[in-house]
Length: 264
Image 1 (cartoon, one colour):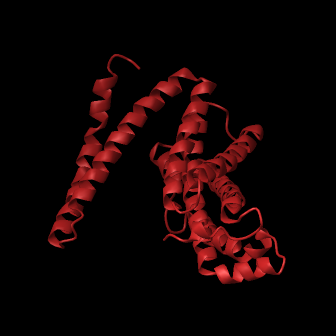
Image 2 (cartoon, one colour):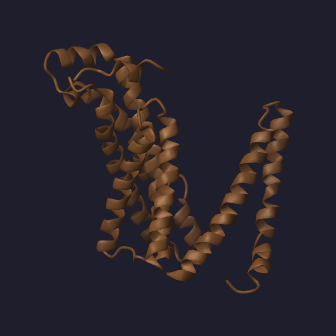
């Protein structure tokens, strides 16, 4: 960074500061409607401002180094945060944070490796870190939903699962319908987004490129790649999470681990 980085940063923050007017509008509406969300709105926007400001400086530092080690470190940090968040969503799944972390890591790492080997993206911080962030974010969402939905469905249909186990079915066979339902529910938003992309809204990557001066044709090329990688990473991560959940749902004798389904 040059010596004038702080001045440049402050100049660049003028428009974001002006955009706070729409947040103020939302706070006023919340107050008038007695929603009680004013505090949450202030906290959320303040936290977003702080987080984005910090990550901006961090990325500026990493981009100026062009070092593979920083790429890996940033990627693992994102995976850890995503694992914690997804684990919180599926808090009744034993070792949910570790299951989520392993699933997110597997899905995003495989997808990113393929993209690099196929030379879709060069292995540089400027490309890999934003790409990894998008994949990890989507994988976090679908993994958390998959784990929570699978555990809840098995709990609701314990009698059916136990009957299947008593008749000699394996845990996979006994919970096939529950797994399928959890995966369909978790992946449906990603697939629906892919079906309607460009028709209802212009995605962030495409919008950013267009606003940055790129031609719409260049923007859609990148957005197509982004949609493909999100579908791939999300699918691998969600399926992986179902396989990693099974050991904690069943005993070694292929019986349901009732204590896992006792709490709400």
